[in-house]
Length: 280
Image (cartoon, rainbow, N blue to C red; front, side, top):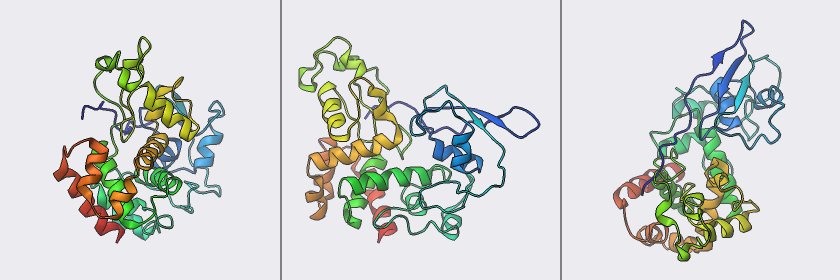
C-alpha cells in the first residue's frame, strides 16, 4: 500500500529564554498528550500555556506550541489513567511496567504491551496511541484478547507500525471513480487514503463521518488525526463484521476483509503473534 511518510514528530523544542520555556512547531502526527509526555510536563499545564488552542484534541502541522518549564505543581502528565508518571522517549517496556502501565485499560492494551507488539514504536508516543486504540476498541465492541490482537496487528501493518497516516500518491488516480463516490472535480486528491486503515473516496469519507460524528467531507484531513484514525479503523472493522472472523480465529480471512487479499501476510502474522503473547 502506498502511504505518505508522515511519522510522529521527534523534532526538539527550541529554548526561547532563560525561563526554560520552549517553542515546538507541530509536526504531522503530533498530539498534545504525546507532547506532554515527550517534554515531561503535565498535560493540563501544556494546555494552559496555549490558550490559542480552542480544542486540545485538534492541533495542526505548523502550529506553534509553547512548552513551559515544568512548574512542579500537582497534576498528571497525562489524564488517561496514568497518575503522575512522565516519560522520556528512551523508556523501555520494562520501565513502563515499573511505572504502572503494564495492565492498560480494562480489556485494552497498555503502552508497555503496545511496545511489545510494535518494537519500533517510540515509547514517548506509546501511551497516547494505546489510549486512542482503547477508546476506539471500546466504542466498536472489540473487546476479547483475540479480537484486539487481530485488530492491533492489522493496524500496525497497515500504518507501518503506527507511523504513517496518509497515502504517498496524490490521489489523482481516484479522480472520477464513481465506485468511490468521487463525482465532483477534485474528489480524487481531496479524499485520498488516510488513517490507519486508509479510508478512500467521497462515499467512504461520508459513511465514516456520519457514523462517528465527524465532518470528514468538509475536513478530510481529520481522518489522518491519530485519535480519528483509530476510530475510523474500528468503524471499518465493525461495518464489515470482522469480529466474526476474528472470533473464529481466521486471521487470513480477517486480512482479506482488511486488505482485499493477503498482501503483507507474513508481517501481519508477526504482529499478531506478538499481540497474542502481549495480551494473553
